[in-house]
Length: 121
Image (cartoon, rainbow, N blue to C red):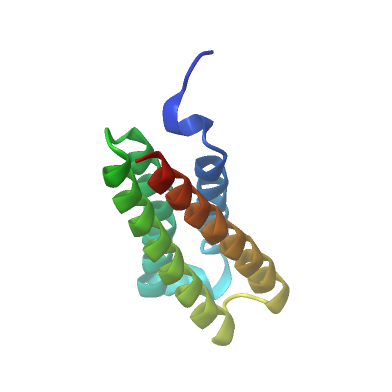
């Protein structure tokens, strides 16, 4: 199949899969009706995968790192929004804990790719 660019990145695949799950989660129960929070959560999730893709496609590591930082910021937004959703009862404790664990892991991966690209400069 050859080089598929950002689609070959494990970090992008994980963030894209998480985004698909976020869409499914926010399409159920009370989430469905809370358009404001639902849409904010979806935008933050989409932003993570999108900025990882954009960062990987940039010409310089400096540019790439900039977009990876934006992805990390969107991840922090998403974690905050999911915490709120959990506390108001839109997300059960088990689902929240699992999503939080996966998002922390993704955040660590984004941090690692930033560090790796800094060394390449």
